[in-house]
Image (cartoon, rainbow, N blue to C red; front, side, top):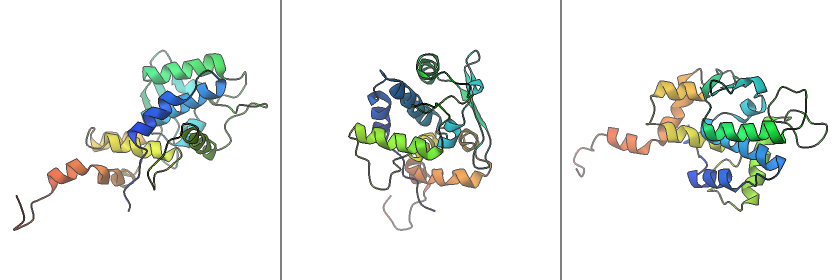
Length: 195
């Protein structure tokens, strides 16, 4: 089992701030990047996100289950809600499709596959001239690793399992390997070693 390689926080911040929101593509992509960063969901969950999964009155967002996991319901953070509102209200093409995010060209349709999102992220990273460390996912999964890495040690393990939508705690256990500070504190001194 290898330690997950997450997108650096600085790169995520540059992606969140650097995408030009003056176009429909920019508004859509910015909302997607913000969802990935804020909630750590899988690309497929964003692709399947439907308009009725956003509860504007209760400030809640529901992500469908993926990869045999559980659905995820979270508080709709204001920054995410504002970006989603901007896209849905002003930049989303008119369509009978229930999915939130649509392709940019006619015929407007739901995003075809999760790799479409990874391709968009890679394109935005390149446009902004960001250089990532070796081994870091240039797609959507790098956000998921970054989210989980930030949460380890800050929230109870059960909460992290729920936030990631895992059914099996072993799926979440890999992220505990990145809590180096916690591991150092838990480590016993080596007999005869320095104190």
